[in-house]
Length: 186
Image 1 (cartoon, one colour):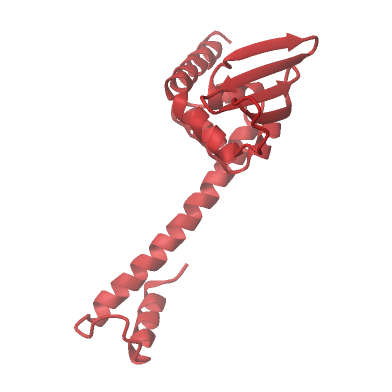
Image 2 (tube, one colour):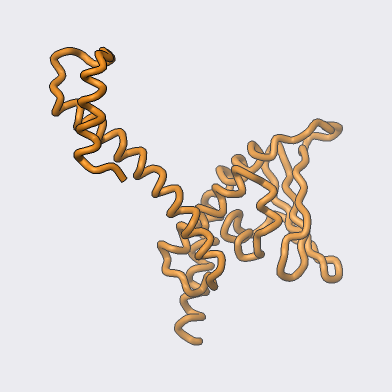
């Protein structure tokens, strides 16, 4: 991390170099503050992103029942963001993760050891195929008959998140209440 001395030194070098990106009436002290703020914001952004990624890894290794409500909420949001950015991460989700991310499915089917959870929006269908403990396969498809075009997975997920906000919030509250009662009784 840069010290205040280094920030002032950088600002002074910028001013001495004749770079006139800033008005002449701006004092060196203002430039120092400006450069310091830019560096500080950049470092904060990097540390927040790194901390978020690190906390997600730590939480995934823990039992969800051990988390406080704010920790569980952050975890649920990180699962949603992670899957929205890369749908292939669905394959690494547990059933609890899937419930926290999308709530209960619109259609549930069990065939022997396999389960299928189906989520629907007006434009797409999202099928998740799993065993008792793990997601094995997923599929996005259009709801329109004869539409064989490649479905935009990110858009379908966004539609699911938006259309199911209330269900997801209720599922989160139910999941947290169940984990809290398990902590108390167990």
